[in-house]
Amino acid sequence: MCLLSRHPATPHFFTSGWNKTLSSRLSPLRSTLTAVFSHKIREDTTEHNDKDEILHDHNHDGIDRRGFLKCMAWAGTGALCLIKGGVLQSYSLSRLPELKEKDVQAELSFVQISDSHMGFNKPANTDVVGTFKAAIDKINALPITPAFMLHTGDVSHLSKPEEFDTVQQMLKSASAKNVFYVPGEHDVINDEGKEFRDRFGKGGQGAGWYSFDNKGVHFIGLVNVMNLKAGGLGNLGQEQLEWMEKDVKHLSKSTPIVVFAHIPLWSIYPEWGWGTDDSAQALSYLKRFGSVTVLNGHIHQTMQKVEGNITFHTAASTAFVQPKPGTAPSAGPMKVPDEQLRSLLGITDVSYKRGEHALAVVDSSLG
Amino acid sequence: MKKITLLIVTTAALAIAAGTPFLRAVFADKPADIKIDNFSFTPQTITVPAGTQVHWTNRDDIPHNVVSEDKSFKSKALDTDDQFSYTFNKPGTYKYFCSIHPKMTATVVVK
Picture (tube, chains in turn green, cyan):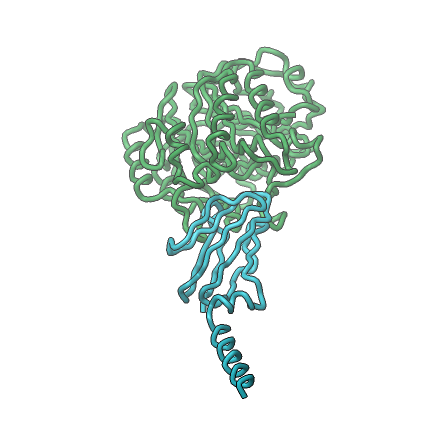
């Protein structure tokens, strides 16, 4: 168990509309919550800190980052990490029945799914249709209907039309009818992404980037899997960066921003291509905003990092697991015991409450 | 005498023929095969005579492709066990990579 309790304050979830008791909603055997995170707007957002030390509210937002990140490492072994008012608390899943739940109605709730790799059929998962269906069932079992879904790419495994077809067909049974997509590198293999754009990219510009607003939150879908250079990482390109700069120029700094793209926009493990060459420039356009959330996929495991006003979050895949950075000869599909597979795949539920400008990001596994 | 002449002529002809790229490839010691596995091309650098047909086979459980940096060749997506071949007729150094996973880079040197 992760011994990082600080205050006796009751933790609460910002995920919307949970009316049932927590213990009935969460069974330790059936789902693993990796983190609940919420953060408030700060006016002075210029400083960021990535030093490995106890920060003690260094950025004046009440978040002990080192403790948070340490707790993330425990999440895989069954601890629940919560942040309330910037203070970190953790509980082993066996203590869940003790937790009280505060009902918070969120004004916006959406789901991120990622890396469905429709068409994959190797030992790491011979039934990606089944696990994708389990993800949809999970979404449909959420207490309220998400406003929409974000798919952060690698919809297909080989950019084949029938693979895209299958995903689109299956998502028709999801409670959230609107889905916004950005492509992964597996979606743009043979045709520079034309098939993907024809199906999913209406309203996009260039390689398919776009933005939209919902309940006061500004969403930006970026494409960082085109024109990749030999030896390089993900790439946004000058045209997209110029578009993005203009896109956010006139927004007030209190507008919560959510950026979603396939390859992580922060450098997780460059040796495996887990990063984007020119993301720093994109993020520089967002420095003045108080609340920025970046949602990515690609690495098939959940990871979070907080840097100043930006929370980075990567989603699990619904298809197969990949190893942690540097722990295997390559980033390829990792075979895990069959009974563990669904616990390592998952979806991400994100909620926003207007006025607090706080986004809560909750990962849950498929089983 | 005629037999010896015939032998000399035949030997000479064979020697010349052996100098052609076609026969060089047929009698080559090393096959020009590149294996794709674990997100890498093996061997990472290969040196072949001009006219050699190089074969790539994907043994990884993830699709890859073969794209030259100078855009002279580009394969379709290769799933596990798929193959791609390209004949290098002109001498030179050909750097290539997998455009799906661009950290995978390799070189074909053609002499």
